[in-house]
Image (cartoon, rainbow, N blue to C red; front, top):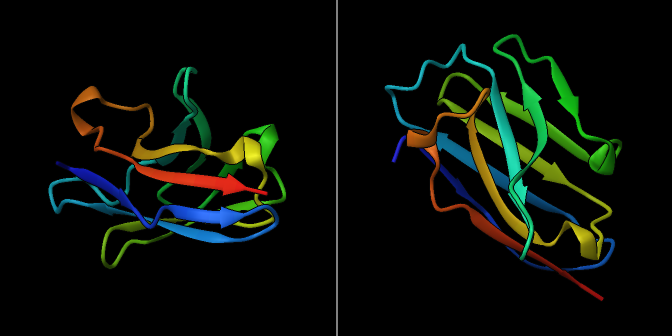
Length: 114
């Protein structure tokens, strides 16, 4: 697996969580990376992206609450999530952007409950 997300878990509404995405050495650390999520019964959707230079963009549902960062030294990307809502419950995945099918890992489940 070239990219593996981790750090998911159960959290209460309003809580915070940090996800990590570890990239294999074969993944160019200058590539734009992205977080995606897939809720039960829904398609996989983009959460946000980060370029090789650290520029970030976010989808409207997470703007102001989620922050993407990366450590190119260890080829790891992070997703800091705060003020979590029940609708953030999903399996979270990381990939390069645009995503490559061969780079999807298993994802990590985030469950937000009241």
